[in-house]
Amino acid sequence: MKFGIVTFPGSNCDYDAYQAVVEQLGEEAVYLWHKDHDLKQCDVIVLPGGFSYGDYLRAGAIARFSPVMRDVVAFAKRGGPVLAICNGFQIACEAGLLPGALLRNASLKFICELVRLRVETSDTMFTNRYDAGALIRIPIAHGDGRYTADEATLDRLEGEGRVVFRYAGGPADADEWWSPNGSMRAIAGIINETGNVLGMMPHPERAVDPLLGSADGLALFESMLARVAV
Amino acid sequence: MSRYRIAVHITPRRGILDPQGKTVADALHTLGFAAVRDVHVGRHIVVELDAGDRKAAEQSTREMCAKLLANPVTEDFEIASVEAA
Image 1: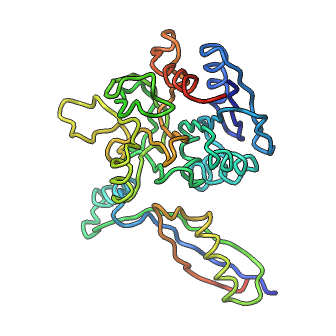
Image 2: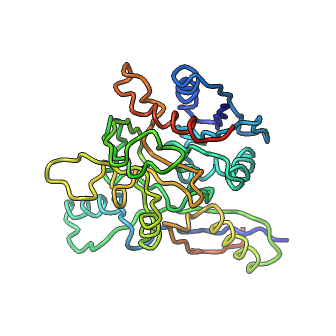
């Protein structure tokens, strides 16, 4: 399987994603330059983390207009799998591939730590190698990760089983929707209507080897391998 | 064609948590501005553009707001002023 990892000016997790795919998963990966209109016949597109265009205006707002995004959106509309991580999630929301927006963390602080997530559904091409309800440890590193959408959108996401990851394991007195960044309903990752675009703030590509503190992210890549037809 | 300078205010939509605004409000309270009820921190953007007339300039700026300058999911915008540049 061939992964295409988009490099925008300011992307800084493209290499991490490349390493996760090539070294840990043992699959092929290529970089896709943001100015090109060439997805190089990739089977999966990764929108990686970083600070594309310096987060000018809003995180992801400018990257969305990069030439390659027109091809990524068309690929997604055809059902092509897109994994949008951190800044990639912000870009996917700005591009209309996913509903909602990621706003400044409620604490106003950049948060960089290993967090616990609950896998809400194993019925996706990105999570079929997890058990639903499993708690996994994946790092976050963002200043703008507060998932926000209107109530109708949130209800719809829940009703359609499209909330894929939730933050879990807050302090003892935390309420049901506790999250490190103030996300509505503790949402850490969602999937689009057709199930082929996953957006998540946590970084599975940084949790693919026990040496990194956790290998819990590897199953996400293995899930794609198991389900995406090549 | 004439040149116009248009100022746009973009603010977080009411009802959406605005931690920056709240922090500033708390700081103002600390400074003794007890009468402050609410603060919202947004963006002020000035666009200079060429247009046939004032109305066209404003219309064009509204489109810019809807497509890029503001996020329709979380922000509101208003044209604060239109001046001949």
